[in-house]
Image 1 (cartoon, protein in one colour):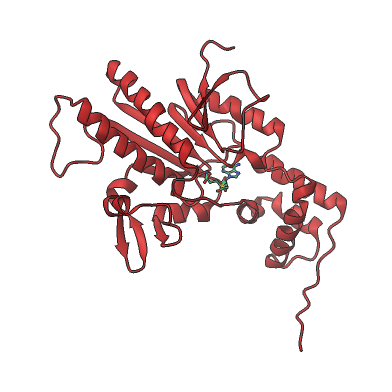
Image 2: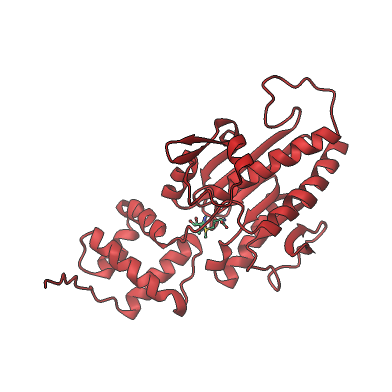
Length: 302
Ligand SMILES: C[S@@+](CC[C@H](N)C(=O)[O-])C[C@H]1O[C@@H](n2cnc3c(N)ncnc32)[C@H](O)[C@@H]1O
């Protein structure tokens, strides 16, 4: 029996610290003792891919001008991209039935017909497409009860005029963004999507499902590193679920502060169902309904 032996290049504690700090500075991801095993493993893989023989040489590459591409590759290898359609239904029901309904009423009173939703850390796109589907369905139902004196062109658009929906979906992982932009999903990935929804919003191509162009056009995918100082502004609702979980407390606080200024007055922030803003900010108040939580911007805080 033959065994393949792949030699591990030694990684000293000092080198690990350097690389850990670099990753933290670049994207906010913090690898504590529970996750250094994962970091070590991914570093070994990248070192081999670069055919380098020491981690110090790898660190020097990452911090050099020529190393930008490798830094992107490393970060892509470190992100966890797990996601699914309609992930955590109670949260999405709170979004659709309570938050959206209230927002539409408030906006219609002000004759403001625009809605802007941001999926920050969108991975391969299931979250922003789920949000697009839920918003289209909510708008259609709202419009039925609150028709407006505007001509509706045929075929009927997903968003009845004069309403306008923009969904921004961003991530730090280019490969995930590319898959999201393509919007093609396997039967297994479609598990949570019921048949009515598949018929309305997807095309079956072979054994896969492709997001219909009308839905795709509502979502704009873009690269944004949440560690950056300036992030997309003017959002009514931000979804940042299962992202902050990889940041340390200081970075979480900074991000929540940035989200505050990225939201319109009284805007809403959804975080992962295992995440919480408790102890991290006084600028949001918590709304808990139907087993789900959302945070609303408090106005007039310094
Ligand atoms: C576990 S996925 C969550 C996907 C989706 N929000 C959900 O809950 O199903 C986390 C995503 O956050 C992204 N991410 C991690 N750090 C980031 C950063 N600094 N800036 C932007 N996105 C980041 C990862 O690339 C990954 O796609």
